[in-house]
Length: 156
Length: 460
Image 1 (spheres, rainbow over the protein chains, first blue to last red):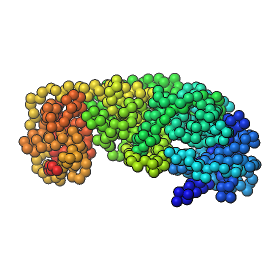
Image 2 (cartoon, one colour):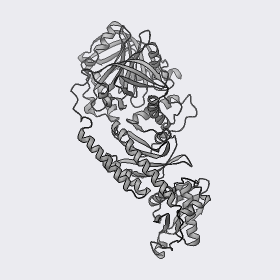
Image 3 (cartoon, rainbow over the protein chains, first blue to last red):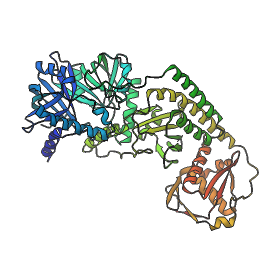
Image 4 (cartoon, rainbow over the protein chains, first blue to last red):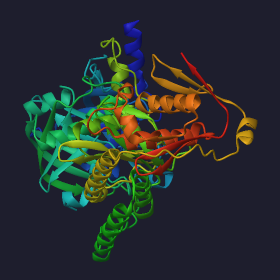
């Protein structure tokens, strides 16, 4: 039962409508962050592809080139249920036009959630999301990050 | 493009959650939301530490951190490169940050579980606008207070001050205060609560902008947002209230397995869908007089400016209320020698033609219900029961404050009995719930009971 709950929680990070953040670090241990716009996995979270806007991810891409360490936080804005995935980058490339529709759909789903929380569409529409880098990582650890006493417990 | 922290004040209101990235000693990053980054001064910010989480552990290993804050009006992002300096577990910064968390914890039934462990203070090494975050430059928003605005504020203060001074009694003072908040500040949903030392509760004495007035609604000291403000005697401004409550509920949900005896969440009084709350304690010295509360559906409705300005106004209101309550208490000591004869507003026949109202006093609850609806409880209930009984037994309808004060069965405290405010509360509750029965002032320290329908008294 507990295993099934944990598995469900792990896979929540792939649902649409989530807020996505990434954390990286440079060779001196200085962390950096930026917002991501979509995540996907086609191998049951063995690997994860994170899409970040080109416009705002220069530091993240630079850091990945040197340290390869990446943290991804996926949070549901209504419930604050959150998952943190940690891993090592395999590659980072410019997302293709074939991926544009998927990214757009995820951005729209997130904008729907924000609109229901009172953030007007005219504002969310103005946030850059494309072109995007697609960063593929090998998933090494998954943590529950929902606020509360269980925050930080390992799910996978 | 670098930015001054003081120019980013909107980013520090907690309307949009901020992000913090840290890294452990091995160089593994961690990224998470924080509900609010607090502005400390031009070179420092603080974050609340509520759990010994990964962020906190990372900071002990590696002081470098990066935060991203968002302007809630334009959605422009700013990145802060920071260095963790220290954790403060007491002092003014801790107290300020703690009040917000305590209030939310109390509101969500999480007191003692959802709590501030420390205020983590960071030095900000750089603050920069995130270039390219928005596809179009944000639209200009009005700048801060101009000189003309400052003059208007002075006039506003003078205007409010005059209005308060002109109030002739406690009841008109409540009205004037709420009118002033609406007319000058455009606060549409406001209430005044008075503190009763005898039962350590705050009672809503007047409100404005609500369908149901809520007059008579009570909150215990330390309970919920208003009770916390009363206990701490500190002003509380909450932005994005719904977000804060969602955060508290998430912790509550996650704590449910561990904590078997979580207190019940307190339903928010007043405005459905309120996004921001401003609650101001009314104090004279260390003594709590009451609380003024304002709510709004706009998460950015109350600003830092309101905090400072209303702090001054609140002091004046507190002094006026205190003075007025004191004066009422003194007035009640004037002996009343002559009681006016029975002077019903309606002729007896007219009164008898109306539908009978049934008032039931429940002894165990110390509460009166009119027909089947709650009317009032505690001391105002005992006062009503006394004068109703007297009226039915003797036909007398006029009473003095003095005789209420000497009647020990009513349980009025020997000093600072707030009799006037209790009578106002009774009067207002009758207007709302039983308009056929009225309390009217008939002169200094006197009041009359007017029944315009047959009254049946039942005691259980």
